[in-house]
Length: 194
Image (cartoon, rainbow, N blue to C red):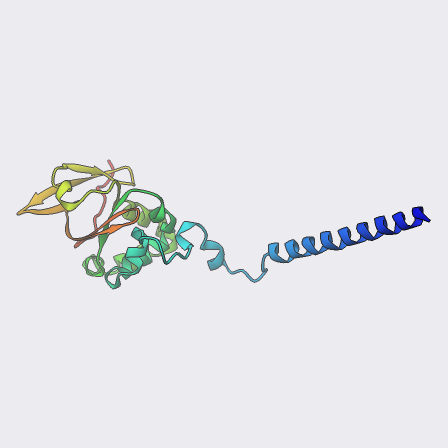
């Protein structure tokens, strides 16, 4: 009598173990399958730039996105796929041209740069607006030039107490979680490579 009772208990145990194991596998299968309806925009939006976070200090990209005066800059950053560059740990200094600064470029320039075939040229211009570091406007007065993210350097000048980087005047500064945004009145164009 003892033997059949042990077999029944053992059989029921294996049956329960199988059911529990199967439930866990189904849960994993359901959550790990990707939707075949994912669009290319969703696939493009990967990386730290697309993580929603309402509690941390805004990074340089968040500041630009939140500014109504920098919608052209944000569109350019998105067209060049540089969002993730602007959210890294830094520190980064971003010289952020206003919409007016972009509008001052020759007619059709912005539209032309936003075309997919000009992505590399646009990225080069935008990287010329980024420098490693986190320096205030006052500290920048001590520099003669800055090394930019596009491997070129931008001259720093002080004229009548105002700081100009790459010919653009710093008109405001906003601290960010990963650096600082210096708002500038002009689009800085990299020097032609020789």
